[in-house]
Each structure stands twice: as C-alpha cells, then as structure tokens.
Length: 74
Image (tube, rainbow, N blue to C red):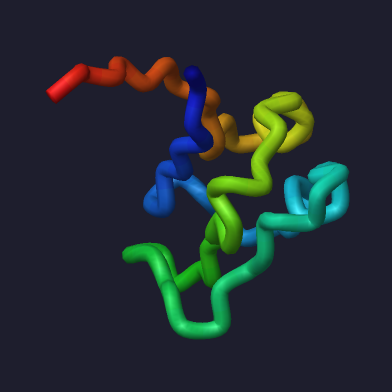
C-alpha cells in the first residue's frame, strides 16, 4: 500500500498538483506556511486517494512522493 507524503518545506505552493489530481483531494492550505513563507499543499482526504501519482509527476519541486507503507498486524 502506498500513501502520499508531502515535504511541506520543499513545497512552493504552485498549485499544479491540485489541478493534476483526478480526485481533487489536494488543496493549498489557507493556514499552513513553510519556513520560506509559502502556503503549502495539503491532502484533504487520504482515503479517497487512488495513488495514481499524477501529483508526484507534475510537482516541479519533487515535494510530493508516493511512499510504501508497511502494515503491521497487531
């Protein structure tokens, strides 16, 4: 299983990922800023993500990654 991982310090808030996402579950935050002063993108519905990778492909700053999640059985 994969999950979206956003490097908020790398994000410049260009918004390209928000337009590329077919599920429209990425948005620019109104309240989150990184150290450079940019509004960063946030994932608003993790469960709706289809892990297509469009956001990772279009991000010019490589601030969004699909990471493999290791699940443990408790």
